[in-house]
Structure formats: structure tokens, C-alpha cells
Length: 282
Image (tube, rainbow, N blue to C red; front, side):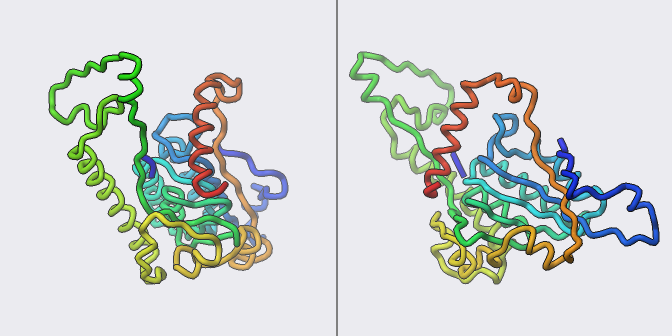
């Protein structure tokens, strides 16, 4: 079903001594938090999930009292639950710290990626960014004919009549499909409610907004899914002054990843990730 701390480079560095000299005005700082990749269940690979991002988000909203937090988003979506958890954490921190949030979409903010973008106060797009896909998808395979052809007998024993619902090695049942559609519909409703709550009267009321369709750049702005065409540095300078400083935050690779351990899992994850991006022509 799809729906740390990095030390800043010298150009972004704000001297600690300067911050402690009262008569010197400290330039405003914008925390830059990159949210790039597929949104996955906690602990799975290098994708985005709430458990991994939580300490980064805490620092981004808290350190040096930033003038704003900028989310740099490039995600085709993934787990609806993790999308909701990350989005909710962004909102909690923004309100607790009284810090505005800007989302800057790179290649794509679709499905769960758009859920994250909608958690921001403003969404800014590149002219070629893909935005939207407000829907939920579940995909699989039916292999019952394949195993029958090779004389393989499927044996399943359950306590509970729905425990083997949608078993890929058994013929599909209408009641199982109807049940799945109900579950997907409930998740879709939550997604729609989130977008309507966050975007409000900026949405133009077009019913196609919630069909899973997606749009590019200016068309997404026209529909109210984004607030304008802009890139991070010039927009933040326009809003917070030419002397604004940027403090980047990003995920660090774990030791096993740095040592290239788990290459098979990483390769499988990469194939799954590429399949999601391919849906948007990327």
C-alpha cells in the first residue's frame, strides 16, 4: 500500500562569538531540512520515516531560533502512516516554536510527498515540478494459475475467515476486494481532509484534485496546490533579507550503509523507489 545533524559548510557558518556580542546584529537563519526519497515504515532502509527524522526536525526548529524552516522535498510518496506522522510532527514543532515553514518542491512531491509539503505554511514549486497524486494505491500479483501449472498445491490454515484475505496464491474474492476498497477509501478520506485543512480556500474546488491526478509547476499553482514558482535561496532572501544564513540538516548514512552491508536489500529498495518515481515520468 503506497500512499545526525550535518554541519554547515563554511559559507553558511554563523560564528558563536558573534552571537554572544550584544551590539552586533545576528543575521536571520533559515533551517534547511531535506526530505528526499520514498516514505517507508520506520527502520526500513534509507527512506524517510518519522523515527529517523524526529531528532533532525527537533534541531531544525530549535537551534538558534530560526526565522523559518525550509523543507526541500523530493518524494514520490510511500507509507500513508509515516506521511501522517512526519506531517503532524512538522505542524507540532512549527506551532510550539512559532516558526513558519516553507516547502520547496524539487522533482516531485506526489502522494505522501505532497502530504509532507502540505504540512508547510507555503509551498513553492519549480516550473517543472510534479505535484499532487492525492490518492491511495495498493498493488500486487495473482500467482494461482502459475503454481497450478507446475502442480504446486497451496495449503493455508487460519483462525478467522479473513486472515488470508487477498492471498496472491488463491483466486481473488469479490468480498476481499470490496473490503480492500473500503480500507483504501478511509485512508484517502484522511489524506483529503489533511489537504483541505492545510490549504483551505487556496484550493480552487476542482474535484479532480482528489482523484490521484498530478500536475506540473504553474498548473499546480493555479489549482491551489502550491503558492508560487520559486527556488529556495532567492525566495528566502526576498522574505528574510539578503544577509539570511542557511543551516542545512540532512540524514546521515548509518555505519552498515557506509560499509555497503546489506547490498541486496538496498538494491531491492532502489528498484521499488525507482518504480514509484517512474509513475511520474522521472
